[in-house]
Image (cartoon, rainbow, N blue to C red; front, side, top):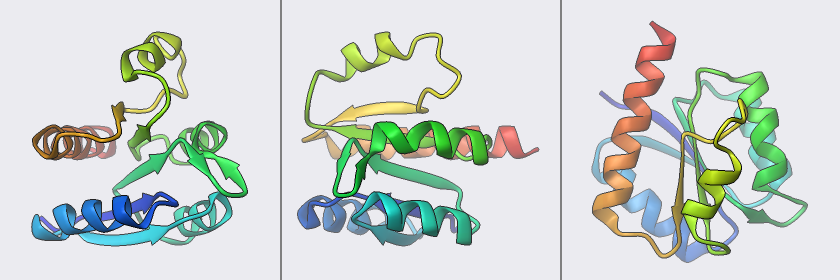
Length: 129
């Protein structure tokens, strides 16, 4: 099933890699490189999933995350970070209702990314049913 996914990252190499993986799976991909553009596109489009970088020009993904979770509770968000280990972020969000679906460290393994996207889309289906 073709899904609509927003990829938000200011590094073009990451955007291109993620777009290539997702379009190869048959998904429609929208792209944004700033926090403002990401929020605009999230509000305008019927998206199934958001893949969000932690650091962006004009704001950051951690600031956008609670907005996305509040406005679109059935839309999973996968965070990408090159900062601290993902496990550290997972512990910080352990009981936070605005937590992302998953946090992946950059650089990530393609198989892990694909598996995480599949699980997130299954969660989207479950929450939308």
